[in-house]
Image (cartoon, rainbow, N blue to C red):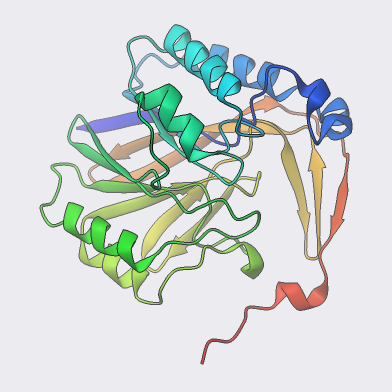
Length: 272
């Protein structure tokens, strides 16, 4: 049996970008909300989807009103599909929980979902602007959730990738985490945050990063430049093996803000 889903990330949704901290950048790269709505239209062409996965930076600046706006869009756009969310560094857990869960809590948003026998484990890697962080407590929680294998295996979803190609952006986690995932039924990892599509292995587990919806990123050895690239992935899990196909929403990049990364930050810190 196969399970299929759309993986989106980094929507950066906001009702009014005129008040954004990145208004000038969005003027060059395009309105993120309009790109998201275009992606929704493309997703409707895929009739065999079992769920939608959105891995964080749902909202650009974590405002409660924008979570309400997002919830309305999701409920209207996907009335018959489960929509599974993780939180990113631009999100804020208190207004998110209030709008989506009708609860008051500042606890990290860690969750377990199951769709047609596939378990989706959600980890909240925090709100630091660069790399995420997974605590020992979260690892112990996850190990407890994974004690009993799921019928079709487990995928792990979190906003900040565990491995990025840029050491300063790799999520901080204890050294044996890859081994822990391999000892259980985790068959793939899905993330966002870096705004470009990337595939790697975390230990022996395939790790897929979707391109950003709100804006893209052009990558070279020491530079990251924002552009108008927007994409999502169509994913399929069959016989515990993942396959991923990127789908472009905005195909012609138009460069905007340039970030130059100091050479010392490109080196992985040595842990004694």
